[in-house]
Image (cartoon, rainbow, N blue to C red; front, side, top):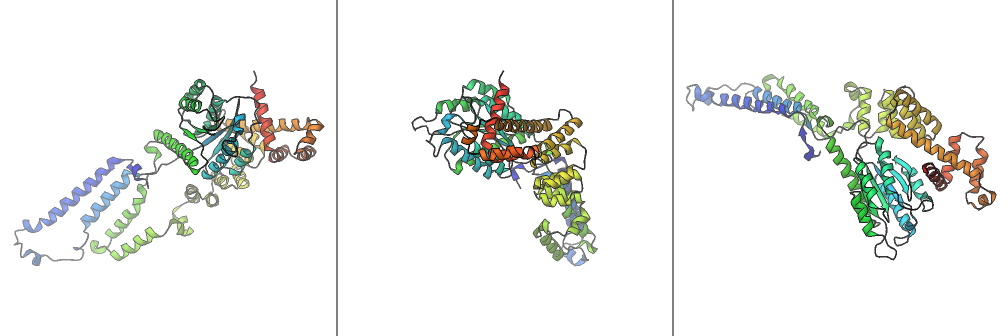
Amino acid sequence: MDLSAFHFLRPWFLLGVALAIALWAAGRGQRAGFGRNSGIATGLLPYLVVHTAGTRGPRPLDMVAAMLALGSVAAAGPAWQRDEPEFLDNVAPLVVAVDLSATMNATDVPPSRLEAAKHTVRDLAARRAGARTGLIAYAGSSHLVLPPTDDRELLDLFVQALSTDLIDRDGRDVPGVIDLTAQVLAAERAGGTLLLMTDGAPAPEQVRQRAQAADNLQTLVMAVGNTEAQGGIDEPALRALARAADAPLGSLTGTPDDLDWITLHAQQHFESVQDADAGPAHWKDAGYWLCWPLALLALLTLRRGWRVAWQACVFAGVFLFTVPPEARADGLADVFLTPDQQGRLAFERGEYSAAAGHFQDPYWKGRAAYSAGDYAAALTAFSQQTTAEAYFYVGNTQVRLRRYDAALGAYDRALALRPGWEPALVNRGIVTRLLAAMSQEQQGDQADPPDQTIADKTAKAGELSKVQVQQAASEDIWLRTLTLSPARFLRSKFAVQDAERQP
């Protein structure tokens, strides 16, 4: 519980607490003044008062005042935890842009600047397990390698393939990186962060303009290199880049401090953006938890003479506060909660497999199965619905299953039902560019002269792909080629994108 965030959603109900105190004080004062106003001598009064059952311990007035006060607190809506929108990952989205300029081959940071940067990206993905991390490569042009994903193995595959010969254009297209990151994070909730890992910087004027135009996008600059070594990094240029992008500037040290610095800035920015947009409707009302002590008080008032069974209260308190919620019998949960409600509780706790087993609603069952990595079950659940959201997640699931043509068809159906829907447009564009780049690579492999094919270490794998082109589905061939040669895939993809950008 974060006490610094504790507040009441409807604080005016707390006036009921003051009313309860006033009633209790008035009643107690009247009882205390009974002897003084009766005209009976004070010394004789104790012997004349008959103590019947219920005159010791809490009295009806005490119980009524306690129930009124506790009910007022519950109605006021105590809150300390945000009620995030559906399926929002409460972790900061991050896009890492790695500079692939030739200077990144320098060895002042062993084994090289680029290898040190790649090692940091892999460690960062491991530190941010469960969070989505994207990857951009840039030199004279900027290219999306991988949109934000929580698939560490896929990210590691592409990180290992990065090299300084993937992009033919010289330079450092930082403005293009900022624009590309803003486009990639357009489907995300505000609060994304761009991490630039570089050893140099372009002219700051265009960087400043692009950074100011990117709303809610924080930029971090991490210098990769040694300022004291011969041919070291240009520190003044990097400082100018950081000022132009209004970005914190750090230096790669190869220690866990690098990861702490990145994750801390990313999460703080994410939380600050959420705080700026937060309101009473975005907080979870925890007042319903007070219904249990209210029910207990109401139960005690039904006892003869209003006496409190203290032993039973102690036993009930120990039972309620020591038995974890998971220990409840399923039958008891079925009495108070519907299967979908039980599934939602499990989903919010991150127990996605259990949630998929509880949900009866096909959409929620599909989302839980998708989050659990059971993509076959997710596809079955989503296919039962004909809404734009269902088709959208059918497309996402087909991408996970490497069925890219089927994914495009699902995105088209979602856009037919909801024209211009940005998440579907963004995802469809990513899959379309991926298929185009893979197709271009296949055509390039077939057009290679024999002498180049012999010199290529992956020639045998390339011949295998050519033989099977006529026998297997196209998406299977593309997947096989991508697995065998991710570096060749990226080189071809970047070349195609650079050619498309030529005027």
